[in-house]
Amino acid sequence: MKCVFVFLSLTMCIGAAALAAEDAAPRSFNINRQVLDFALLDTKGRFHELRRTDAKAVVLFFTMNECPIARQSYSKLRELQKGFADRGVDVWIISTDDTESRASIEKEMRDHGVGSTPVLIDDAKGVTRMLGVTRTCEAIAIGTKDWKVFYRGAVDDQLVEGAKKPAATAKYLERALEEFLSARAVTEATTVVHGCVIHFDSPKGEADTAISYAKDIAPLLEKKCVQCHSPGNIGQWSMSNYGKVKSKAAMMQEVVLARRMPPWDADPHYGKFSNDRSLTTVEKRLLLRWIEEGARRGDGEDPLASLNVPKNEWPLGKPDLIVSLPAPQEIPATGVFDYRHVDVPLELTNAVWVGAAVIKPGNYECTHHVIVRVKYPKEGRTSTEQAEGLEGWSPGKTFERFPTGTGIRLKPGAVINFELHYTATGKPETDRTEIGLYFLKEKPELRYESRMAVNLELNIPPGESDVRTHATAGFKRDTMLYGFVPHMHTRGAWMKYEALYPDGRRETLLHVPRYDFNWQIEYTLAQPKRMPAGSWILCTGGFDNSARNPNNPDPKKRVTWGEQSFDEMFIGFLNVAELPETKTLSKK
Image (cartoon, rainbow, N blue to C red; front, top):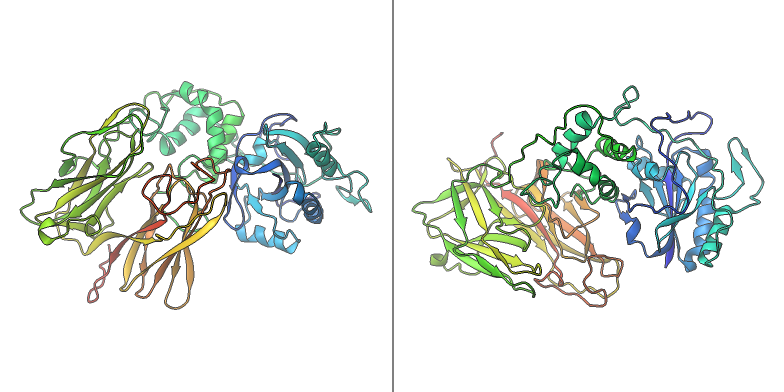
């Protein structure tokens, strides 16, 4: 077991810093108070979550770029980490710089000798505000048995604003750790912090600090949350009015801080995506501050109370053709179920081009995933390996029309094949999944398809927290690349897509630092990328088969490839359209 130190960084020198505005400053956070779960990315894009550490304690130490006291503290942290390493002490450095780039923060820490200590970035200052930190160089120690603060204050008494002793005479943090790890009471649980003042902007700007539920919060929730959190849709509770939202405000705070909601796991440092559902830094600050200040109702009508969100039957409108399972599927109350495959012939007299397809599960509770393929028995293509991919559904899937100028061809004799994976809910269930097809009026220029980089040779040892693997997919001809769907199971931890170009260049296209099996997200590029012939996609990723992975069904088991959730997969799906050799793609 280890202790974790979190060192939060800001960019303000003590002499030049002004006090943060009183109305924007965070509220105090007392000793023996339980800390909410939170998660942050570090300067290398790695994911760190408080409640997934195997430490005995977590110590948060706050700093910022160009803070002179912080710069003189890094060597002390390294020595502290070294001295407590065998006793379960880790160090995290977390930067709350909201005006500095990831590269500049990393350079600041590298130039001042941080070494291998991870530097986490609290760009929305959500963790800083939640913990009531107002100055850099504050250390906060949290016991992971009950997640309560047992020490907060300075590392020692050597450094103060504008002065420095030859050596520290009181090592506050070290003494608190010794006492905590020895199961003794911490004799001095709080000390005065000397550091750079942290500036907190109002989420709405300096001149307008009041946050209105009716004008600010309700429209934000409508934009980013209500589509799922409404009656008949996938969210487990409905944001139907102010009262419902306030009753869940504390939980909303934690899931936002822990990066669990909204469900979007792409590292913002890489790529732009048209279906990005994440909160911006400003939106996150606005929502978190409103909650911290008591989630007040304020004046004005309740926009959510009068909002009528239709059940998401067919998000793209009425389909041209709806294909249903011939009969309801019966799912027992308990058990582990093999994949089911159901064929439904299409009565097509001529070829058609599909411009969109929407899968609608008949029962979200028990449906794990659905994959729809197209078989052509008259051509001898009867197996799923010979079938052409059409569309898939899993939790988190959103549907859009295929990219402009692309489509999927269905010929006479086509047979729709439903691959259905169900999970037990504890009571008998039924399902009758459907797929809605939207036809194009004209033949498109390009054929839309899904390809994959896949590694079938998985061998994941028990207890390991970062077992890495990779897979590749190549392009023999120039190809338009539209998006990605990373796929692993419950031990999946992270995945990255990189482009390897014929001229030797290497580019990260998507990085998912926290893969969440519960949300199989499709990431659609805001601007499609042309991949020249001879390019490759390299997918790398990691599995967490340790006990600290809360989704792990059995950390003592060696895991290989398999269809069930307790087995594993490693697939980097790619949505593409190959360009013809003799034609150029028209501008649209």
